[in-house]
Image (cartoon, rainbow, N blue to C red; front, top):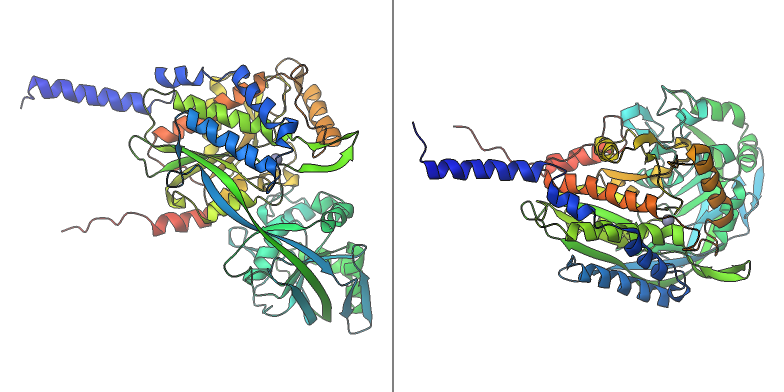
Length: 563
Ligand SMILES: [Zn+2]
């Protein structure tokens, strides 16, 4: 059989086109990537981190300026507003200022214990209501408060906590025992985070949840909780007023917890130790908790900025880039300055994201999949903008291939490494390895996995909702000055500038070389993902795999019936 020569030529042309579009580094993408540069990046930082933007706090003039700036940049680059043509997605928020009763009363079998607010307990509520009264709620010690099928662990097995208050330990049994066979050993899993403890207790129907604080296991001292309790909490508005959450969410010091357990005739040390051993069984303490909270509520709306470049083929599938635009605004004076400019957190990463976006806009041939850029609001107050997007996505999550998040970049020069937070979570790791190799960089896991950084920025909102998510940056070894110099610089940032007015941008002392390289790295990874047709998966031991698997199974195309 012969093929007419015309069709033969056409087939060869088609094969060539397929090959070109599947190769991650074709000439088109290289040219586009090379337009990323330090001057352009710096213009964005100078604007976003300037005093004129007033620290970019939600609901302020700083928000208006910031979101307008970002939308204009995307529009100028030729991006489309992703929300039915609009560059904005409204994020309805509520501010809750709670005042707990000064004493938490715990009536135990042996005696009644009275605990002092702030010194011994912290209490708040996510329920959007004026008043919470916990009146004699039965107290149960539920170990670590974890249900983790992939680790064969269930602290709530056979336990009914409806209407009761659970008391649980922070972190997870792997950290407590440092046993690498338990959970992920020293590295924190999401089950170790206090946010998870609150969520699981609510799923179990508990009325209250109290986490027992311990400095090493929490990663921060009790004073951090005390300081956090003084301000108002910002939350997403919810149709159910967050009535599905526990009425009471709070913390106890280790001493306060021991006091309660002693009044129940229980040895806290022995109990806490047994909670980290497989087969632990929860303990009905016989104590009853009484506490109340009075709330003041204020409703307001902030904005996510959403911009997209529609895909040329699989346009209904998308790769999402995120960077939070918000910071702390104008606050308490430190060293004569009250504007919290947030240059490293998060103006530089935002500028970096804009440069990645510009590279995409410079492609002659659009990638097959849509690329979506979101500058999210209210990260600093609990990843709220990204959580809102994940709950109200523009592209269905089962069509969302991956999330790449830009968070906290330092302008200290080119790095020899790419540090991966949450290393081992998903198949996205191999994309990082590929892209890093092309830049002659090596890939390394985060240095302190016990701090749970993977759960602390916006990519986590995607991970939790099942979408494989990456949090990476050059963070370990300066190409010229080495790793010790670099960790010194990072330590200096945490201790002197993090969340302070001095997190500013100084063009004279900054070197944007590393951030330019990271913008290119994100472009390489995003470009590869946007030209493929496959969906990278979570790895087997990931706590986010089950959500993704059931989502993908539910939306899997139905196989045609055989005849
Ligand atoms: Zn940040």
